[in-house]
Image 1: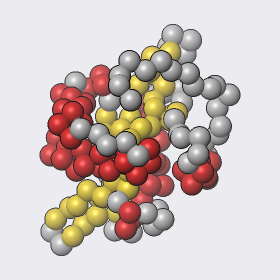
Image 2: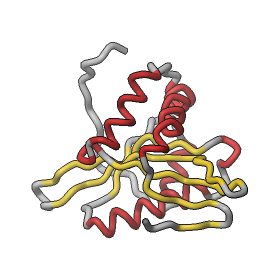
Image 3: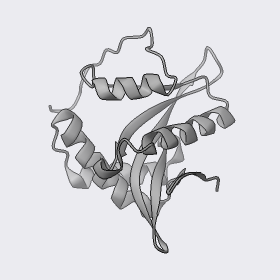
Length: 162
């Protein structure tokens, strides 16, 4: 399994043992960024499904060493969308969360660069993401990492209760 290290931080592909941390991060991220209280049992089942069914996506984690132990301090999800135009996948970066005490220390940049290298190795058309229109901090971070504003706008029709 490939690993990248930046000072004390390491990134790797997540394993099923990381599911409790990822579940917690997703619940906290939804509340922090969108004010949404998610149902923990549904989020747990959603995270576990990604590990059970690889076509749903892949999680990646950022970790820090604590003595002989490793602590997961951040995560993200990559989902795939098939492009018949390009005959390859587009990868979407989703569910990004870094523990607050580790923010602004290069952890997200390290995680992003690790995922970017995975995308390149997989031969994807591009790495995309959705960002809340008002999340200026996140937008600046993505631009700083070399991402560009897409010419696409997003439309949706929800089939779940808001």
